[in-house]
Length: 115
Length: 112
Image (cartoon, rainbow over all chains, first blue to last red; front, side, top):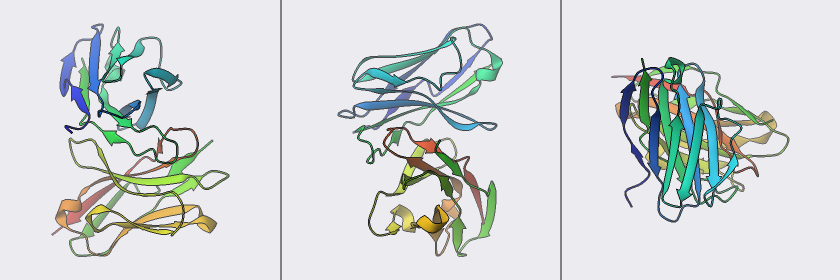
């Protein structure tokens, strides 16, 4: 298996632009997580899905952020409009989704810079 | 609410020296406990996990961790550090919620 695949690896955009980050989880994993990592706040869970259904989006910062999982093999995290404070590394992770055995496999991350 | 504390932000050791990274959790019951490692520019990789049973767990790359219920701790150890161990280390907890809560991380620097 190729692991969790994220794209793009790096994105530089201007304030106000729309940003879409993509994630392909490991085949057979039924839970998918989006995390954001910054120096100031560390690793924050933004949202997670189980069987393509959003379970907890309490970590999504505000309405500018949205996430979808249209099928078991694809998820997107969208920021519209983007702001400089959104600059961070965004990680996608997937797991078998069983509590207590929730070993996450992380992608390599998408580094976002908003100018 | 569950929380994880890693009191050491940055640790520097010499190659070949022993290592202990501290992790304390706050939760009414014993959570599931994890250590992850992040190399520069990479995602997080699982080092080891504790669910139940033997309180000393072995992981990859020669790491081990010991769960101490009385201290609410899950410290990570390695008897002899290699230069390639330089990375950031994250402790995480989870209990019946499917959500992993991560500590703020400890950055390990290794000098030759």
